[in-house]
Image (cartoon, rainbow, N blue to C red):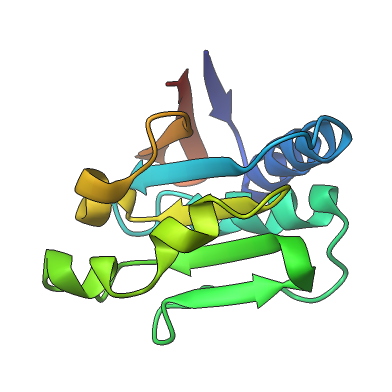
Length: 140
């Protein structure tokens, strides 16, 4: 599926809808992998996703800490500053993937593709023009 959003608000709303849908169908661990260049809308989407999941706190990118836990069941991972694959492996994400009924959202997921679970949602973000983004969903 492919969606073109016309604003940051529209990107957040798309994430929020997905977060609500996932929350209702929360029967197993979920991993969402986000791909796209810097400024393509990944963090904006995660903010909406978190809101739809029920998180009231302000969601910011965990660029320097790599992993943030919001509530006991929503992990936000940002691998932008990871330089070596072994660094990603040492974050303990493989254990988190197996926790029951959690949502793990990973920005820059390509930096740890070797340890990503097979069953996941891949979302690619593409910057088109000023506020327009193409968001492509692929379920594995």
